[in-house]
Image (cartoon, rainbow, N blue to C red):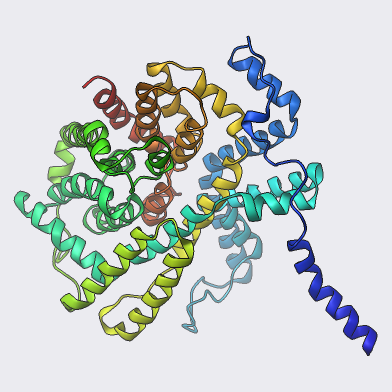
Length: 494
């Protein structure tokens, strides 16, 4: 008995011992300044030298590339999962449903659900983070993998996005946002095209004050109700999605605290609100307005032909008391203020849950599925992104102003734009012109792919049910291409 108790104590103490193990002797990932880069070599020479000095760099980047490719085939995998589910039900001669009303399907296929999971874009980088972790263990050891994933990677942004998405999608906040945008849409008679234009113009600019994740959540939910539910054509659906992503990406640059790529550099480069508005803000507003005008003219006939659903413009449910809405806004404001302190904003969210419970008759259900999936996506992305600096930094450091803008825009399509701007702070001797080029390029490319900007997965998660088979990465790229070029013109020419 005593032996069993001792063995049990040892087993329980083992995880604590592993967690308390010392950090690896050699820093991982290797500090960029620690590489012996060739003095006279070009960009490719530096990349080759770093790959030779640390061969695991190549392994990490190959895994990252596979994860990116996975996002392109995710809709097909999800389609396979649906077929497996249908065959499973046919084999059992049952209909899919919830006959006992317990909120869960009565019968599912295990392998069908596995395929659905592998087909969720939000799960892709988390899935490949497992492969990356296993590779780190194989090449560097368990201590190095544990220290990197648990201590080195910063998960503040993924956690913040989860909380802000949950808060922004509550009934009082959504009701207030809808009422405010209804006033703007009423200038166009409250018709679908007026809602479309109001949401795509006002919501992105609000992102500079309520943060981009909150603006994305509100804009996507309102577009779902006032526009996507009317079943527009596929071209217009993808054009709108691309326009939304681009506008949100640049709409947060009027201030220094709302857009993740700006947050990464504001303190390091001494950028404040006045600097952001005078150097970025008016470019962003111009880009949003021009993009919306161009798309409204291209899709003019279809937008004007859309008819609101019966009763679709009426407010649903009983009105929310003003004081309840004010408390929700206070929680939202506190979360934005505490964005860099997870202990504070997570604690604040727990108080919010208690408040929502106490005022349940004025609330909708707090749904955490989409926020948690988006947080999982971003957490996986920062795990991979932290090991890509070895090649991104020399690429950025070797470019002039215009090539740097173009390079940052293109690189953003394959990595989170916040990582691009963060790595730019590590490049020595950056002039103000180069700083402007890299940040403006990073936000310009923020709509090209779902991984380009942190709030994009939130928007896709909300709207993907309107796209048969899920959102196509190629469709999103084509939908965002025109507004991306317009925004590039606004930043680099105007």
